Length: 266
Image (cartoon, rainbow, N blue to C red; front, side, top):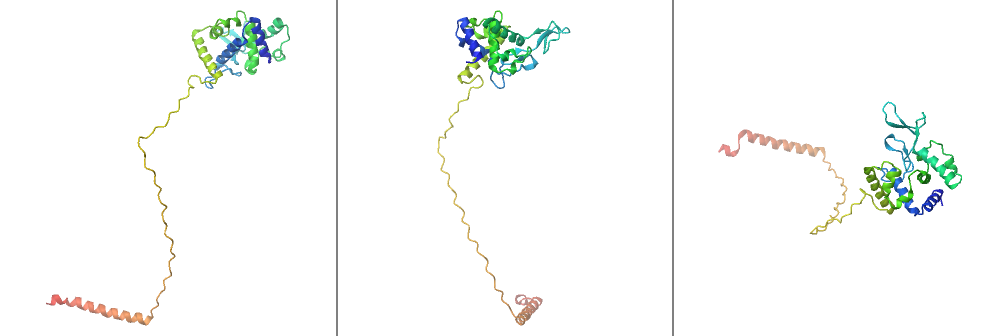
């Protein structure tokens, strides 16, 4: 059994209640406080508050000190204490309450890692189970906070009163949305905007297409190698004789053209 589980069992026994009720509330609060819209999950140990705020870790315990800006009159925060009027934020307070729980309630030495934490520590640098231990002991020692009320109070209402402390209706509505997503994730089911689209059956034609006929492979005729042509050699004397005969025939044709055809002479 881990130390966090041991403390959970002790708190449930002290309140005479089911430890699963406390554990469920703790997990839903961590899920909501560290919700990552892009990753669509929560209970992120190293979560850093968006917008530059002091919230750190799964439960967004605030680091540093709060002070009132004398120029604007608004509440601001800084990592180190610079004036006597600076007030420690929730992370510093949670660490001290955890130490007080071990020493004053249990009468035990706190775990070494808890003793070794600097006063102005960063919760986001702790493993999730140690952050959960701080959450449990913080609310055990916090004035007015009571896990027993979870038996008659919705978790969003308990969170709004004792952890978030503003009890804003709109923020509680947002908490309920994330709590529902946590339950879906726990069951392995989809969350909102993650519901899968059912796969539809492909459409069917109301007629059948003729089968595709395979084209025959083209027949390529065999390549025939050209046969060498035998040249006939004619003697020079024979060629000159034929030239003389052709010249005589041309002379006759020229004579006829000059004298006119026999039809013209008639």
